[in-house]
Image (cartoon, rainbow, N blue to C red; front, side, top):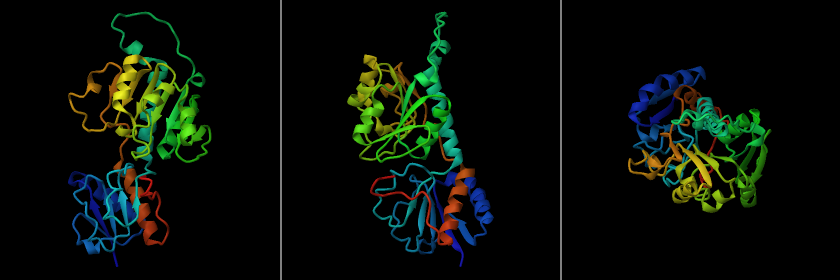
Length: 311
């Protein structure tokens, strides 16, 4: 019997994903039906995005897994109607590469002081070379797949990189810390901090006034993770006091960022419109097809979400 795969993301994504998913499923020799409209009781797998119209999973009585197209799953983990395994988009090489490029670029921007040369209306001649990378302590908050990839890329450039996670991790080239005491150590004296944590009750406002006070005076904050990781009011206060010199923010509590939000007008903030990284359909289709093939062959699914932890 054919495996039935329901594509339940926005309609605009279907035309892009359909040929890519078919090619990936064909490569794995699967007998399948792929579409956007099946009777719920026929569906084995759902390829999903949390902004989908599908929010009630109760009728999907045969469901083997929901395969999320995004790395973030905070929009679905609380759905009590979902009882099947939930996998998130982790091993998408396009998503990872995009994040590494964005993070590395903005770290180098702050490390090298590029703005002072690009934005130089007075044509000031100030030949002050920046320190070398080993003299610049960088902290990555979050050692999931994206945090590890970014941390190792920065370490390969010579940066002194500390990584922090809630649970113990060991990553080649990084000093790894964990837990509340480790968080304090990771923040203390950091000159650049990059946030790549999921949005959970444990991580919301993790960069608050007390946390920012531990950073080196004039530190830079880079957030391509989730908007609620930062206390917005505390960030504005730290920028105004000079404790934080600049914040580059790609994610926000409300998106799109409202036109009257103070972040837009603050000279110490760079806003980018949630572009640090995104799921690349060509590589994402391969990840989805791999998990469907594993499910059909009796192998455990990859990248399963711990619903209790929220990621």
